[in-house]
Amino acid sequence: MNQDENKQQNGIQNDDQMPEDNHSGESKWKAFFAKRWAFPALYLMAAAFIIALMYGQAHRMVNVGNNDAAGQAVKTSQPAAVTTATTTSFVWPIAPDTTDARVVRGFFDANAKGATLQTLAADLVSYDQSYQGSTGVDIAMAGNSKTFGVVAASAGTVTDVRNSPVMGWTVVIQSANGYTETYQSLGTVDVKEGQQVTQGQDLGASGYNQREASLGNHLFFEVEKNGVAVDPSSLLPKSMS
Image 1 (cartoon, rainbow, N blue to C red):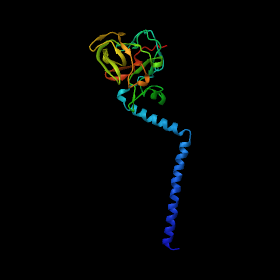
Image 2 (image 1 turned 90 degrees about the vertical axis):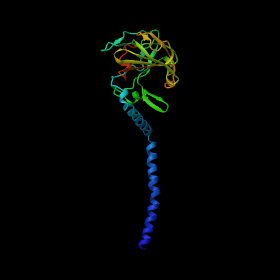
Image 3 (image 1 turned 90 degrees about the horizontal axis):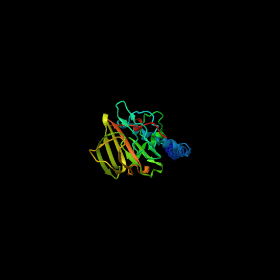
């Protein structure tokens, strides 16, 4: 057999082996996805990626310690107001006669003590095919369908009152010491821009919005200190039942 015949024979043998190699690669992928842990592992990787993106929004997140408010019932009678080192006090932004109210979504804090992928994922807001860490707390009654009164968590001046189908009615109040409170997803509003309000004064009632439609009838409450969102639970009374 001459050299040309040897090369031709070798070329045929190599060509015959290529499909076997491809088939072997496909078999490995099939074997991987056949494992029970494959899809859960991919899900956790995707969740970790999303949370990593949320963590990158550091200007909207501060380390405020452990958030123990989520899922706990808010006391129906307003407890004593919490007074911070700057003498600004806060109460829960719900009417005193509200029963069975609870925090249904907490503040997204990637630095919170004991935070896990599951707890952080629960504080993500999904809207219009995107995710964002919650910059406040969402409060609703059992069943997320009952309307309840909303009151001012702290005294101050109403700086904005507006309505949109995405966020519902929004009321913004500027308080002392650089604090700004935002009340969103209101169904009705009882105050107007420029009005001075006292702590516990009626602002309106809870309602619905498109951005957090899955939460039903609720209130979104956000607090900023000098333009940076802080966990409202770190300022509100700790007593819950």
